[in-house]
Picture 1 (cartoon, helix red, strand yellow):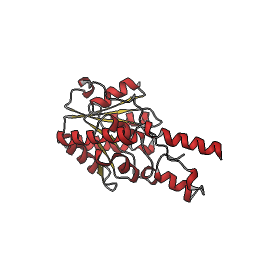
Picture 2: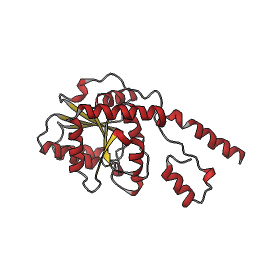
Picture 3: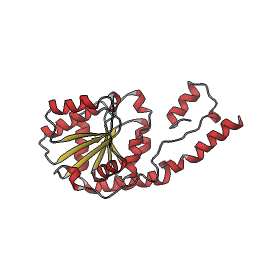
Picture 4: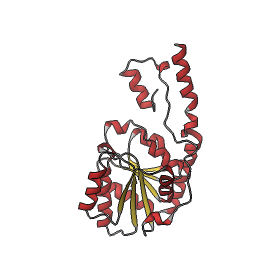
Length: 232
């Protein structure tokens, strides 16, 4: 079982598997992952909230995101708060970076939270971000947070990547990998300043999840993979 076409192609070309033995089973959100009522307190007194959910490790690019936050602070945009949700081995060092960069008033890391709290934070967010470091692995990987953002009707800012673009399509704006900080900061602010564009992108993403990327659409392929294994 492969999570996308890129990994399926590797299983066939590098792994030597027969194409009929490889099934794409995407890791999409379940029907229980739905938006809840936004909580203005989650914005920490700011007009806008940018949300992130995921692991806190080297490949996830949270250090890049903190430089983006610093860039936005230097631009004297005092109307944006960032909340990053999730556990991971880099969490202590990231919190230390927040203190060293004097960003405590602009960004917070929650660590692990319940799904109810996660849904409230992301449902309150105006924009969701994916700062995954541009690497060969991330280029061909499908990140479940992208579909989660889309399921909640949130517009996305991320670096341009093969599978990231396949998943999000028009629900995201894409940044140049060679401009790690400035372009990501500029795209976030561009979206925050355009409510109609955010609304259009969020609606597109929600429809795409409902019609194509939700977990229920992967069940037939999962069952087909089991059937193939049993019969073989």
